[in-house]
Image (cartoon, rainbow, N blue to C red; front, side):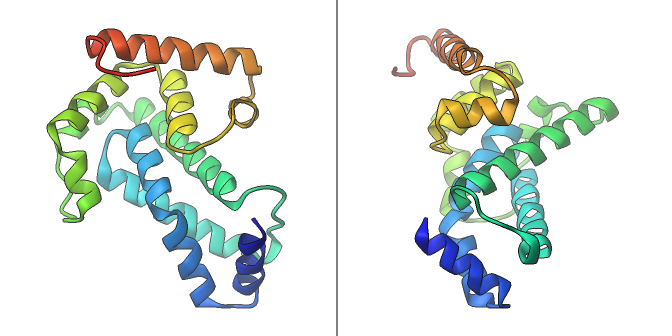
Length: 181
C-alpha cells in the first residue's frame, strides 16, 4: 500500500513510468474481474482501459484512502455494472450470445478464457443473478472482503454473504459438484 501511494504521487507529478507500473501490477486482476462480470473478453479490455483513462484524468485530485487495487477493482465493477444496465436497456446483445465471439488478442490470458473448462464455468457464471456473480468475482478474483463488497453494493454484510453462498451453491448444482467450497 505504501508503494501504491508512492507510485500515485509520481503519477501526480507526471511520471509515465509510475502509471505503467500501476497498470502492469493490476491489469490482470482487473481484466479477470471485468471478463467474469461481463462474459466477454473484448468488452472487458474496453472497461479496464476506460477505468485507467478516468484514473489518469482524475489523478491530480485523487486521494487514496485505502487500497489502490481495491479502488480500481471497485471502478471496474461499477463500470461493468453500468455497461450491463445500458446493454439491458438497449437489448441489442445478450451476454450468452456475446460469449460466442472471440477476442482477436492472442495472449495466454485470453487463450485460457477459451479453454473448455473455463467456458463451462463462464457459462455457469452468466446463469447466476448479477448480484451473486459480482460478489463471487469480487471475493475470489478481486480479493475483496465481504465488508468492502457490502459497501460497494450498498447492502448489508449478511446480504453479501448470502449472495456468495447462494451463488456458489448454484454454481455447484450447475456444474454437478465440480466447484469446490
